[in-house]
Image (cartoon, rainbow, N blue to C red; front, side, top):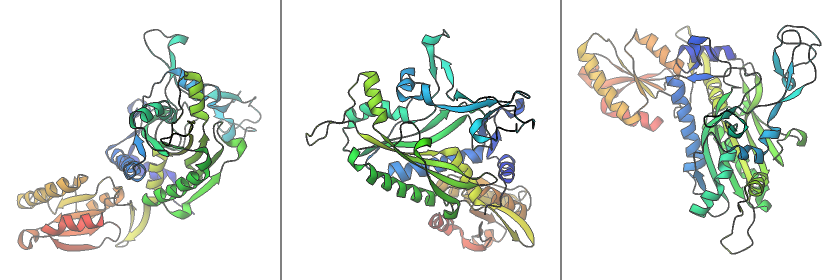
Length: 436
């Protein structure tokens, strides 16, 4: 049972520089959030972990970075213009609008009036924009609502350039935009989001084999993020609820604070729907020609998709812990060490003693050169500094005191155990590196 409240995570994120409300000084904008210094670094670490796990460690994956704005014909061919929508209802009393599938339509959740909703209508979630100086139907296009189509339209370029063996994947990380009817629950449902995704091109006869391969691999990805297994579950999506292009979809759910179990990622068998449609609409031959000379064909596709923002929220939620140290309550983030936005904090015992600060800065520079994600903290007493670093998930703190000047040792303190030990200066980097 998840006892952490979402409000605790939101408060920590604002207080410690992980996530801020977008445009906050102007009252904010619903569904937009800004990542502060620690949040941006944590997001970067999660993305790097994904790239390492799914892309860099493999020989069959090709990374691209496609345009956010694309020819509108792409979205017509993919079906997004006709089908990328949610059911919208409006309260006749207060005129607030809601997703019909997310509320009890017998009573308005805003004003409390009963039976104020009419029939639901479909609301297309794509952001419309215009390209060029004239705003007319000829200049109309959309901000991409997903990454997949960029990989499908670049499929031919990758094949022509690299001629990869089948199966192979095309991957990318990037922004997507969805005009959500009711963005909510912090960074869980937003209008601007970041996605990590790849399309894995296969023979139709192999789809079940590769579906299972990526299904198992995704569980390994969860483990690499340190997510608790008992807070994860798979949900088989029924035929009536699947996207129009999918023959089979599994959604992965995580037990979020306050929200309970909700979607964190998905695995879909998209068949040859996308490539076939783009071939038909563009007039370009998108068939794959096997190297053995057998008949060309349009590959089928397995698609694992991962929302960066939801994974970051899951990582923070999973890491949030409360314990007691020296009879005082301690809130801390037990982040996996390779994901922590700050790996090491360096403290001079006192900041007004040049002999200490000079030595501490020397050690700080050496550690920062090695690990990069290192912070200097000389504000307040040591106990407060430890609590501050615990709350942002810093695995190790290094304190330089007057004894350091004599015995050439520092105090290394572990976040999770709060254990402190004296180690020689020359062993600091190797000791931390072996743990990270």
